[in-house]
Image (tube, rainbow, N blue to C red):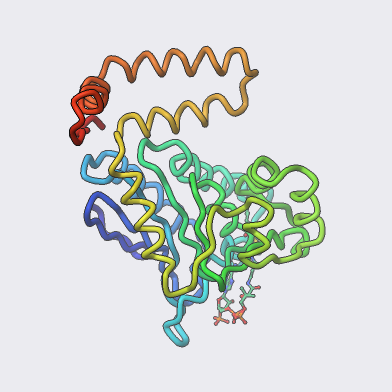
Length: 267
Ligand code: CO8
């Protein structure tokens, strides 16, 4: 694996934990971090020993507390952007963000603290979000004279509905973890101490299933989401057919009928 300035990667028990670590800037996303994310996600996707990826934020410089997941895109880098540079920055982020969304491994954002602007947006690019009680979500961009530019206007509306997305983006209101759970922005809320153990427990449960089947189910959900229902169900039938030609299907169904534990190995 490559070495990174702003990321840390640990892999154990088929679970990768990728930590965004810019303690001097509450883990804000600058160009270097976006490029490192792209490299790291490409390398992780190629690994057969990683079934689930957990994305989280590293501790703050002041007291080493886990205060921020990601406090947004890096404002000090964006402040002098021309229109063309800003567009390029947005497109630069979209590559790793789409990787999080579409890579064959399941991606879980473990949100510890601030998930503002680009931080909320990168969490939304993951398949699943688990938040600690100290998490804060928001899209403060219009207060800075810009709009969410890492997919926030699109992914927030898809996750919580257009009315709530418009309210959050137009008012810049921040919401806590429980409100994020109530509106469907996060899947689960935990105590701060239990955030990583909760994320790892869910990751382990997912990793114990047929990993190839999970990755095909992820592709079916993602690909069908923006299709009309007739074509989406036909696409699902095609992918279902593909899973029926696998070792895992024969093993999984055979094990059920023989009343034994299945040994699922496809990925
Ligand atoms: N960018 C750069 N530096 C940051 C950022 C950021 N987003 N957030 C915090 N920092 C830095 C601070 O400047 C500070 O640095 P220093 O110690 O050198 O002064 C350090 O991190 C600690 O921050 P604070 O002292 O402000 O910590 P507080 O606990 O007082 O406040 C907050 C924490 C409330 C999170 C506060 O830091 C804050 O409001 N940060 C900015 C949050 C924000 O507005 N985020 C959205 C940014 S815009 C965005 O994400 C757009 C995404 C799409 C871009 C698309 C482009 C095409």
